[in-house]
Image (cartoon, rainbow, N blue to C red; front, side):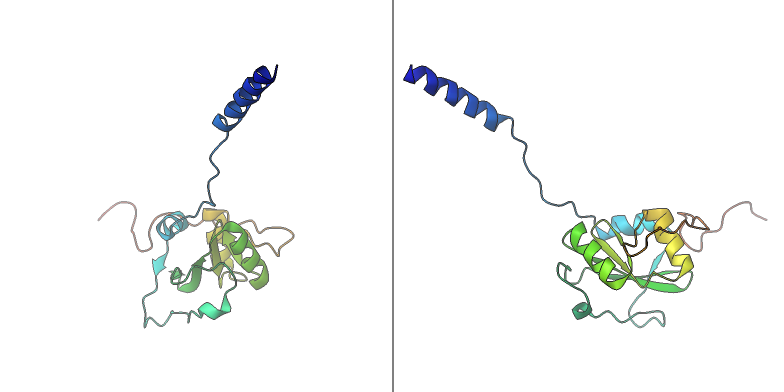
Amino acid sequence: MKSLLFIISLTFSSLLFSCSKKVEGPIRIKVEEVIKELGPVTEVKKGDPKEIPFRPEFYGEGMIENSYKILSYKDLAFIIVEFESEEHAHKEAKRLKQYYYKNWLLDEVANEPSLEDLVVANLKAVNPTLTHQIIPRHHPSKEPVGKAGGGGH
């Protein structure tokens, strides 16, 4: 009887372990993917008049060092900063009253209608401090800035 119980428990244990799923860590989105999804933005280079000073000490727990980019859309600059997880990005967006997308904080966006339209329309970014998320008035095209469309002369 003991051996039968042992065999049953061994069989049950092996089935239990063979069916267990591998638990993966949080999914992080790369900066290139965020920029591609944003669409018509350009990266602001050092020394550009639109450059926004980046101070890493201003950002909270979970920020990934040197992960930020300063981007421009319609001559409005904003900062994107990568965090270790979506939870960290959400927490920081809430603290700063800004937007986040997955594991990215989108800083200097709130209260700039063009930037809000851009990040909400193209990324479905969220500002956790708003009780009602904005609805974009204009849906920014995914075409790169400066690309002419249409016929020739």
